Length: 267
Image 1 (tube, one colour):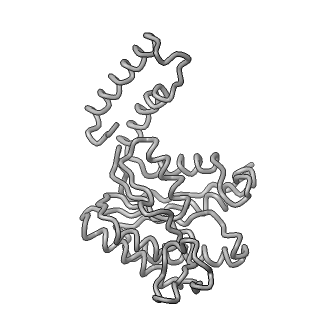
Image 2 (cartoon, helix red, strand yellow):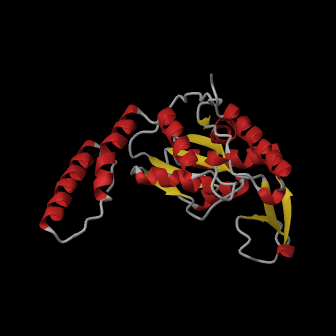
Image 3 (cartoon, one colour):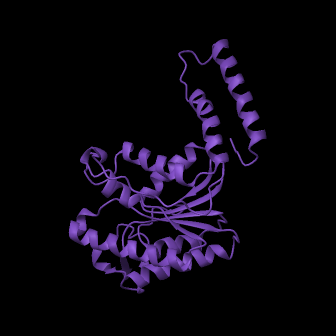
């Protein structure tokens, strides 16, 4: 008897290699996944201008950075944007200015898709073999009301699907939103605020993500890096002892050996 629904994840026609050059832009969920990439020593840039919740702000980030990733991951949080009345422009951060200076707007499916498309096209001018992974953040927006939050997520899901169909050889959709809401639909997988995924949920999504997208080389690297990472995280009683210094020297020899085996590995 099954007690949960396992989300089937379609395999992409590309893989993420060991120590790959990756750009992540989007909601705070992008930060969470970005930390996992950093821990596993991928060459990753995460939200270089801060967390970006909507497709317009993701596009603005792409235009401000000169990053040339082979893999770009966009995590869509909301279709709500704030427009500065004085200029009529969408702002990425209200910078704690009075709310009266802004107008809130909900982007349509087509508008969301257009901003995502423009972001992809901008990156394609820099990287010929670009691959883009789209996700929708599973984090709900309580301040909108849960019905409005669900409508916002539905808009993003439809926009992501539209872009993925238009760029089917470049764009891949990863179902992080569906894993949380359909597979892990239990409050034990949420943090104490009952809104954000718990660390356990993030670890599970990371496991599904890496199993689906990592190349055999990347999986092998993570496996070889794990004992070294654990050794480097060891906190000794006496860091000045000869025994600990010898332990670190042996660990660094392993780091050097890993560097030779994986040229993109940067310690």
